[in-house]
Image 1: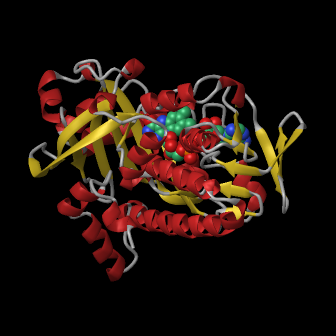
Image 2: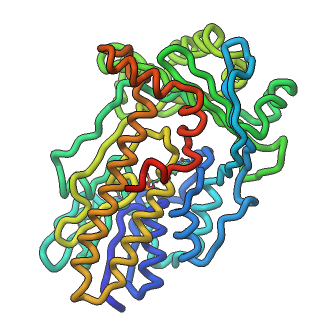
Image 3: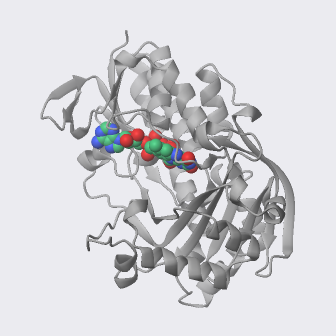
Length: 408
Ligand SMILES: Cc1cc2nc3c(=O)[nH]c(=O)nc-3n(C[C@H](O)[C@H](O)[C@H](O)COP(=O)(O)OP(=O)(O)OC[C@H]3O[C@@H](n4cnc5c(N)ncnc54)[C@H](O)[C@@H]3O)c2cc1C
């Protein structure tokens, strides 16, 4: 064995880095606070080169059978007419299938479910993980793959805070069978968009329960981005029936009826008939505040940050899982180097992944620039207009070719 590595977080980036490091001879332990297998949140993942590469290194190919293929993209007007369309085949892979593939490859005795890390202390020659039961474990290296609200990041860089962007995403999943047949025909096999003033809505078909991709048994996944300034409007939306405020996100069952009812009324008033139908037929719509964060550093002594823990971009470019896989596989390559070359390899890894993370953050902020509220000046108005152009929207959201914006 080359040495020991503790990975905090056992989702996409944690499992990918864990698997690839094991293949390179490291003794890896993954700590995941969730007690059972992680459940899919249902949405489709657009796989890109990094994800294909990481899976190949882990010994598997991502195939079309692992998701739902869309043949193109359509932009509707409010009366439901098609105002723009492009042909662009794209696979929406099932998160659950990817996760389960990685999980079955990683040994159970090294994957510690239901274990929460509460802090990290890193020194020159080792890093010490502290668990929420008060116990500790030392490793040669620790990797923070613990997502958006990373404890590892907080221990290393406590000054870094998530930035609320000023808008929320209303989301929902509808069984295909609940969508009226005529509407279903217009939505099937294509990603669909609509741009209400200052807002943006999209939808596409994803795998159904138990990741089935059989037509008729899948889900339609929709996301509606809406400006919601910090303060009274956000507090109102994220306060439950008992008066408790959940600024970081409210569980679907805690959303007050009046909040959902207001959104449903707006859907009838503002959306094209196709999207009215999907919102109407969604049993449990839910809301997420859209946040972003960029780390200034990814390495500190014996600790590294990857995936959402390192950079959380707004979701528009659809590159989160691919970026997580890219962070993980390139970090594993740096750890493969002999000791005398490792610190240079890690430094180069950090510089390159900071560059990718920053480019991703910028591009995603551009794509969502008009969602935080009205423009404050002419320059901003022109920028908003640019990113609401049908061509920019249809090519840029869930990017068909994200590398256009992420390469040097
Ligand atoms: C259950 C689940 C389902 C998802 N489904 C989708 C989807 O359908 N579509 C999509 O686009 N994205 C989905 N995502 C998000 C997507 O996977 C991430 O944006 C991306 O994969 C980045 O992955 P990550 O591993 O860096 O972070 P995450 O996927 O957020 O994983 C972080 C992991 O760390 C664990 N963790 C956090 N804090 C601690 C701690 N203190 N101690 C121990 N463990 C900790 C969390 O439980 C989580 O499993 C999902 C994430 C999760 C966790």
